[in-house]
Length: 104
Image 1 (cartoon, rainbow, N blue to C red):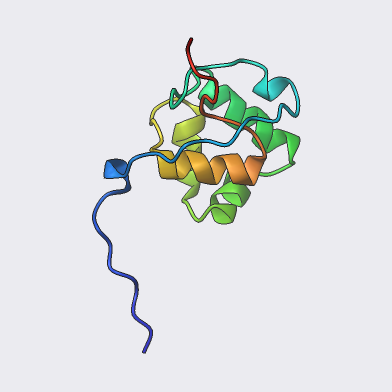
Image 2 (cartoon, rainbow, N blue to C red):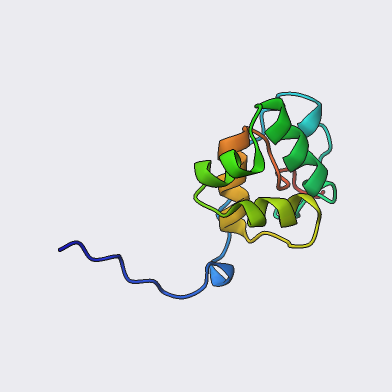
């Protein structure tokens, strides 16, 4: 019988890993923000990137193992994702959603 790995608690408590240098791909990634800072236009960026890939909210949810309602609430700005969800979205949508430039 297969057993699920033990969980240490909420993903909200985990520290974010250092981000790799950004490689701008298009206008969705044009704005620079500080390290670890979430983009203010995140809902719009997620929606535009999803539509660019011709994915429905349900398709994106299945791709990242989340419910359609999570994607809907994220795109309308009703929820703020944790770092784990941000990483999943970044990989699935090929877009940078957190800052990678350091303040001088």
